[in-house]
Amino acid sequence: MISFQNLDLAGNSLVGRIPSPLGQLKRLETLNLSQNNLTGSLPSTFDGLVSLTSVDISYNQLQGSLPSIEAFHNATIEALRNNKGLCGNISGLEACPITHNPPGQRRKNVVLIVLFPVIGTLFLMFLLLGISYMLYQKVRKTENQPQEEPIQNLFAVWSYDGKIVYENIVEATEEFDSKYCIGVGGCGSVYRAELPTGQVVAVKKLHLETDDRMFSILKSFVAEIRALTEIRHRNIVKLFGFCSHPRHSFLVYEYLEGGSLDKILKSVEKAIALDWDTRINMVKGVANALYYMHHSCSPPIIHRDISSKNILLNLDYEAHIFDFGTTKILNPDSFNWTSFAGTFGYSAPELAYTTVVNEKCDVYSYGVLTLEVVLGQHPGYLISSLFSPSSSSVCSTARNLLLKEVLDQRISFPTNLITEEIISVAKLALACLNESPRSRPSMEQVCKELSIPNPASSVELNMITLGDLFDLKD
Image (tube, rainbow, N blue to C red):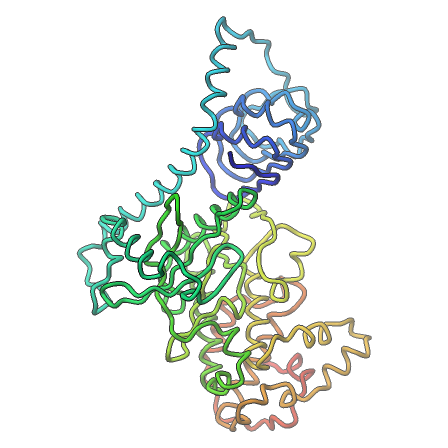
């Protein structure tokens, strides 16, 4: 049986009744189902959640009596407010009418309890089957459209004969042998697989070996599928398909031969190949993808983990955003609360004290990434110095540094033709790093600035300090 201690599904646009199998998570301590559109009454199985200490079911359409457990007895009205008709002995709620169980109800409850472990497993299976059906409908609508790929693409018929593709991938990776592994993340490992047609794909296999993280990994799995079936952009890695199987669950992406930006910047030999024109185009590509996600998708999509390890390059060094397991699809009718997700060193500072996310979290991460591309290494030390209190001698010293001194020294010094663009990109990066989310530019503003042609610079790069970048006018 699956066992969890903390379950946070707030703001996930969930609809319908709460599944009864949730009441079988005997070790569950905190439960947050707020900011959804759940209906009906709370399952009677919740009476068995004796380990539960904290609960929040506010802002739903729930009704009926509260479970007879301590977590609900001690709940505040804030954790229960804005529902259709909850009742109970809580200040702010109406008292429940007195009812009597009909004869035979106890026997019925015993039968239901026996079925719960089976239903729990079926619930997760139906969830993934539902997504499969969604993709099937999407394929049916587009099957008559011309394909972009000149070679046969097995994933064009993924929904019709997924078994063949599954067996091909398992065979191509020799049961996911480590020699085919090209990357490891928190939720899974990525493998290179060459299929019988000659097509090469990247396969992200989920880590489902331990029960304690299974639910969060499956949640990430669903989030990634949901996001990537809705978006198509040249700077976002394409999702070809997915598979949920008792032995292996994985996602299948286009394969990008250039690898991750993180690994390239750490290699002197590979970093030299990234000249200034290439680096400027990379940060423009990432900006265009984020602009598309934030402003062209409805509702907006937040990535929440923009970092150099999640930027993949093709052979032309064109940047593609990867790994959408932490994405958040914003609900315009809610506060969009969520638990922390992302990579330390790239995450916005406000996430240390708030659980509300918006587009400006991605903007901050983009600023860190852009500086990393310009400096050739993670700019953590520089950011902490530049944004120290204004009276700090550390801040003053950092702002007096010449821009040319912090540029990546492994490549040639920029010529006058590219100088203005480097200054513009560095200035935008620092604007994105503003500690106040409201003061950061939107990705629409960033893309607009990056699209303005820059003439040959009359500014001497040798004279520009980092402090000057805060003062330069648009």
